[in-house]
Image (cartoon, rainbow, N blue to C red; front, top):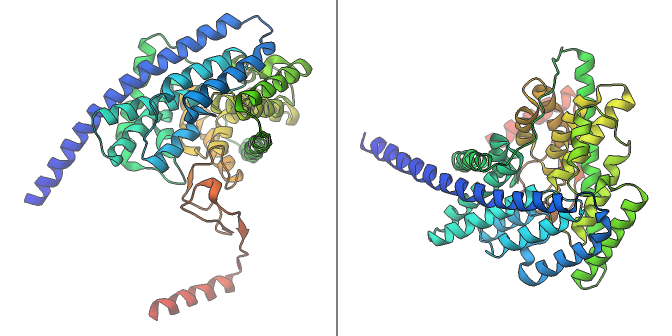
Length: 448
């Protein structure tokens, strides 16, 4: 009886502790990300109507310059660096990352860089909570938990999806596993952060679909095939990102000079194709989900624009480009095959996130929070198929692999995705006799 009382008392105190700390983290991150989002919105409004792609060389040069000399950890798309800090440094982050990431991202996106705003929000949230943990003199374990709360709160506040944001913060770290010990504080931080940003005037994209599903085998098969297609699109985006990053690394040049070159490439691409692939691309995402026609190859061009932006000195996230790619790919899938383009644009948005980021659970919940419950079951099926179809790759190479996506494949587990040394195929005997034989072999081994 005494042990039970002690156990429940410790758990009660622990719950109170993390409710308080996660609420504080939510308030801090909600306020910090609101400041970032408002500055970003003002920056975008200031350059709106200009042929801003001519500013891109200067913008990427300046972004690379301040990152190189003030906070190198602010490089790239934000969330990747946070995952790396959690796995390698127990969440310890340089405080300069917060203002540098804010400034570099505003410069990049406002001048037309093809990047998103969720990565900076996750990195700003993680940086704020890391400093908060240091002030409270937390040990590595508690600091890591608080920084994960910062990721969840940052993701929740940028998209207005508190539940999906909370799950994303704990799902994105490990492929195929959830950190249950951080679920409660992540939920609280995400909800509080969302409420703070909403109260301070941030508005969000929510587009409930006028869609009453009538279950049929034909429609279900369409959804399954769409999941395969979106998984291949996720794979293409990951490979293009890595290819362009390797190309940038081969250029043995001063980083700001590479930014100048990358900005020039983007300006040329925008002049040749269209400037719709620059910036956040929210108008194109909305058009796709509302059923409007978008260019058939637009999702491939967005992959290229975003890869060049982030590999050549630009700062920003990858989830907003993923939404653009998913929505336009889904619209194309629907129109080419004679399906409803708006439904598959919505499913594509979340399925690309599930595949590229290896986060099928948070992507499925996001479908409910953004598009309503009617499309959610179908989006969830497509998300899981996309997640499996993408294979053992990720837009975040610092993710740790903790599952194999097929028992017929051999992959090293427990390592970061960038350190896994390829995948090999292991043929399986699927016959009844083969299965019985293996069963007898297992029994013999146990007896020995």
